[in-house]
Length: 210
Ligand SMILES: Cc1cc2nc3c(=O)[nH]c(=O)nc-3n(C[C@H](O)[C@H](O)[C@H](O)COP(=O)(O)O)c2cc1C
Image 1 (cartoon, rainbow, N blue to C red):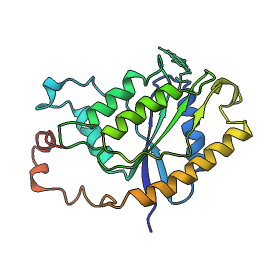
Image 2: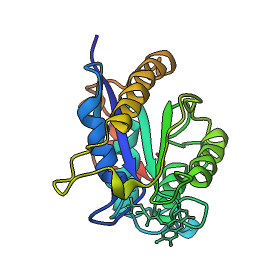
Image 3: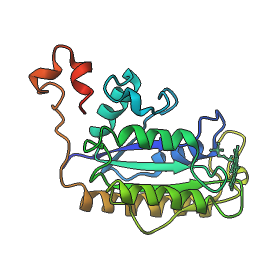
Image 4: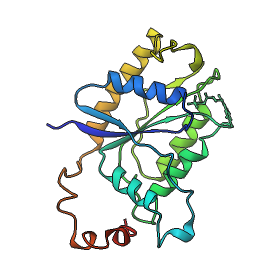
């Protein structure tokens, strides 16, 4: 059985982001049946409904990319008790055009990482609320709220806190079971080669409908 492909989305654009460091630590702990890759969201133009009929290339690329993953794993900071705008922007872009959401039916997981002691609880649950609406089966437990993130890494960005490593390991192993159970429709590996005729010529225009 092939490994399930998981898009890892990090809701921080900061170079030294603790969420990104944590995501990389989890990638290193993932079991063999999961293939985790970070999908960048820093190049996504701001969502604007006026552009739905002529979507920017960055939106189209993002939608195509996400469609090709079996599952999504979010790492979110907490900004003012909610998710950062860049992460919400990525969610909104993926959710449109109406009826063609790339999140629909795609299993997901949420990890929040913060320097505060509540571990980004507010952001974690705001994100879960959107994912419920987007019909993405989101792993309910184990939950993972990581606080005081600045104390968990050494100067080489290695996660040195053993307890946190253990939590990440448990989370990613539970997530692998969640994905196996909830991702019955694996994307075809050859879907691009076999894409519909309409996507072969002026395919950007055709993808406006994705
Ligand atoms: C605009 C803004 C709002 C923030 N609001 C919160 C908050 O509500 N709760 C919290 O725990 N931390 C908050 N923080 C601190 C973040 O936890 C901290 O900047 C963290 O490092 C962000 O994640 P990152 O390291 O992945 O970029 C906020 C930071 C910024 C810049």
